[in-house]
Amino acid sequence: MNFYPSFWTQASRKRRRIYSACLVLVLVVVATFSGMLVPMSQKDAQALNDELNQMIEQNGAAGNLAPTIFIHNLLLCLAMFIPLAGLPIGLGIMFMTGMGFRAAFDLQSANAASTAAAANMTPATAILLLISILLTFLCEYTSYVIGMTESVWLFRRITQNRWRELKTTAILIGTVTVLLAIGAIVETWAVTQPL
Image (cartoon, rainbow, N blue to C red; front, side, top):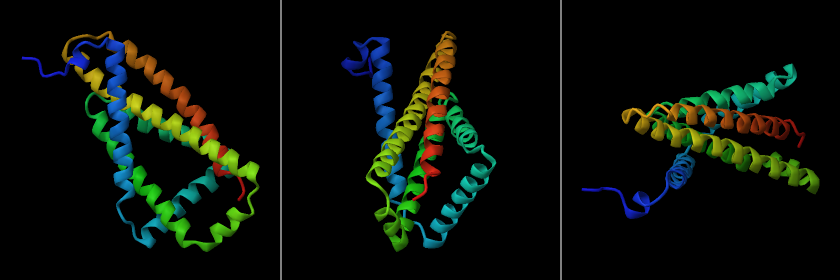
């Protein structure tokens, strides 16, 4: 008895990977938005924001903010490649990311000075910041989706004794390394822009 739908069984291996990545992307978005729904106290949100600002100031002053962001994101992404365990690890990270977004949004809405600073921003700077934020999310979320999807595929191939999947995994790790390096450079530029 076949438990798989016909669109899956009739699809090529490449198309199955695309279907898997699309499903993981949906799960990542749901996990992130679920984290955004969790209310956070003003004190906890401020503590999270202070910790982030301290890291940016310390590493920015030392000139190693981009490498710090890159290494942090790469380690998270590599954890997402762990066979089968990478998917729940990644979804947990995305949930926590959503909570971080919620904390940032809550602080921004509570801080009237931020709206005054945004009013002084030039349109060109605002557009560049928006593009850099979108590019950072694209690079990071694509990397995380690749890692979590490969986690499942790697587990499946190992249980089938198909060790050639390790070559695919190595190529994908190289791909996400490049994406995360680009994302870290862009993110560094974005967070160091004066508002």
